[in-house]
Image 1 (cartoon, rainbow, N blue to C red):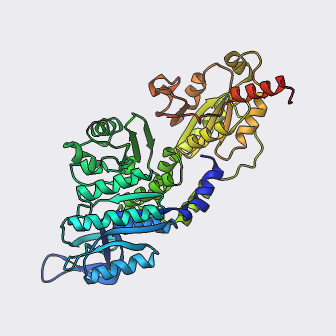
Image 2 (cartoon, rainbow, N blue to C red):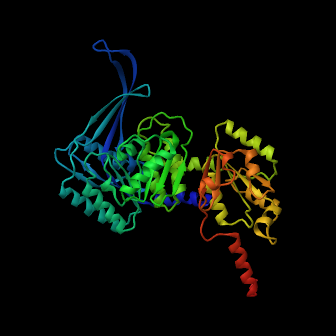
Length: 493
């Protein structure tokens, strides 16, 4: 995605999105205090309570994340007629969330979780809940509500399942079918070992434990093992994509067509992971609904998760925080281009790596820089903190492309590339492949464009891992050259 497009998404598209969140709505209550002594009545710590706060939890936290991204959010779920239901409605209204989809059942206990914290550490959790599935009449009411929302215009739907009874097999199936008929993307945060009711979902987002529950055995949090488990699930169920959240190892998306996207976790001090999965689900679906690519949506969701885990308690992401993070990540480059030797570039890479920063490398001719190049480079840059571009010299381009190329001199191509905000350094190489250059630079991630397999990428042994980014269809230097030639033949230029 271009920087301007991400700017447009964060500043213009997000506030215009209309998203429905359906699932188990909860209240999360927090008792904050200090522990200074042990009780004389029993060997337990005494928590001196300083304050109590209540926030939206469960599916309602997903809705809160979307609302704080400034989306228009409509919530549906099951509540009772108790005090906690009134508290839930007040919290939804304070967040400007439409609660028209809430089904009220008399005598039902609205799910509430109370966490007692002492000095920022959780000591105990108390759950107040009643797990009973929706009745058929309630399922019909939910379907009618969904159809009404679709008619009024929806950009996406999230099913947030905490196994409290809202997302029965029939209810989930009815919602997914209605969404698909209207071409609306559906994301599911799953629970349990049988995911049949989620069939047809566009994205299913388990964590490692939930993935293990589904396949019936412990899945080790390693890329190959996770991918293999996801493929088994794809064989059993009808999902377009599985998006596995992997804690400190980031997120991996596996499509039913075999395509794989990886995004490492944002380096961040972790205080509390409560609600982080809700943040990922909300932010990712919003990005997909805003027509961003899977890769860019994944990176935005991971960045959002990195923000919320640094907070205490269930904390929804705010659009202003994403905008601030994007501005910090996306600085303007005003310094004139200065050519660096391979060795000088390698020294700079080592300095970045010693600070724990990820260095991404890609290479190419980049003759007549066009939109496709920029899209590709910006997606590559978002895989780490720094992007280094290996640029084929004029002699190298001529050997690869023919005697009429390049059309733009190597130094001019380097100047254009270095002016891009996503590019940190440009280094020229004269060989046909960047293998020798990579042996010197040794980046963390080697990126290749097209439909290559990672094991076929030249120089892969000099990087920690390889990522493949498909080229944007419809953009190529060859196509531009042909268009100019055709116009010249017609005498139009």
